[in-house]
Image (cartoon, rainbow, N blue to C red):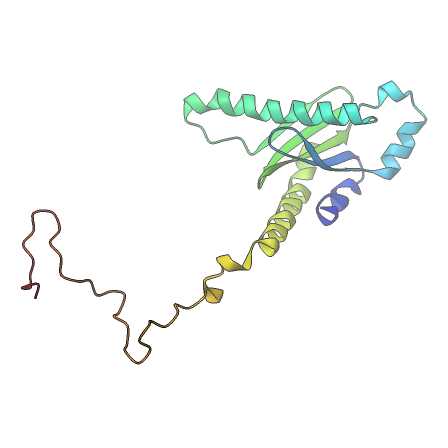
Length: 178
C-alpha cells in the first residue's frame, strides 16, 4: 500500500491519505510529513488527524457517511456515489470508493478538491493493478489443468459437445436409444 498512498501524501496541501475498509477500519494511513511538521507548532487539539483515536473516528465517520448517502439515494434508483467531498472550516475531506475499500484524503484549507481527482484516480488504478497481480493464478484459463486421460488411454474420449440420447421433458427421443 506504500506505492498507493505515498504519492498522495506527498502532494502539497494534503494532510492525510488513508485507505480504510468499507466497515470503517483503517488499513493504512500516510501523513504528509512537511504539513504535519508545520502543524506541530500549533495546539495539538487543533490538529484533527493527530491521534490514533482521531484516525479511527475519521475512518468510521467516512464509512458511515458513504453508507448513509448510498441508502438515501437508493430509493431514487441513482447509482452508488463514487466520490464524496465535505468542505469544512479547517480543511476538506474527500472519500472515494476503491475496490474493496475507501480512499480517504484530508486537505488543508484553501486546496480545491477538484485538484485531487486525478491523483486519487491514479492511486486507485495502482491499487487495482496490485490486486490483479496478487490474484491466484488458478483463475487464469491458460493455466487450467487439462483433463486426465480416461481409464482406457488408447480410446478417444467423446467430444464434450456430444450428448447421449435422452428424452428431455415431453420430447420424443430422435434416435432409437439402442
